[in-house]
Image (cartoon, rainbow, N blue to C red):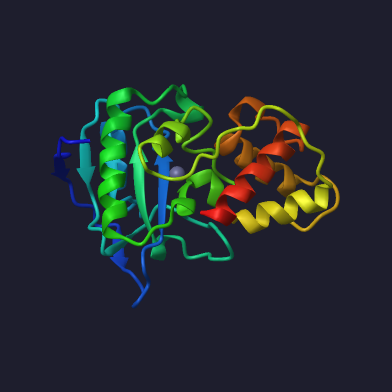
Length: 240
Ligand SMILES: [Zn+2]
């Protein structure tokens, strides 16, 4: 990554001060879920909308900065990760232009991913964000959100030094008691319910996990492949 990323300033009024002393330790990725970049820019800079992100990246790689990194942007909403709930206070948010599941979800083009990778690497050099805290919106809000979704290339991002991607051991599926799977998901960071049996919230957390780590198995059930993947991700995070 030798080319410096050029960034267009497009300030949003939708931000406030980070609470004193809060370090940035989460990088949170989104898709816009809107029909065009212009529509997303308008909304993310509209004072009445009360939403924003620090950056927006178009499908052609164009990058806008809407909120300075030292300020709190308003992108996570009601969210939780590893027991923390004010995710905006401790995160930097990046929106990726994509119509999303509502308007025609499609792959993220190479130029968009190249800009994202360059931006993320710069951010990680500036803030103490561990690889395990490069997250998707659906990871921190599994009840409400599906972005950036199952087409997002987390493996490619990790190959370029951003976030974690433990290789899949395809040699064997695993069995995992439901309650233990929920406990391991909690230890990974998800707001998983303590339950020995399937429930609505448990299904949503399993869907979020699969969307992120096992998109080929996006079913919301604790399949043997999902159990194996939970064990792999859990082990990778513990050793990271
Ligand atoms: Zn989002």
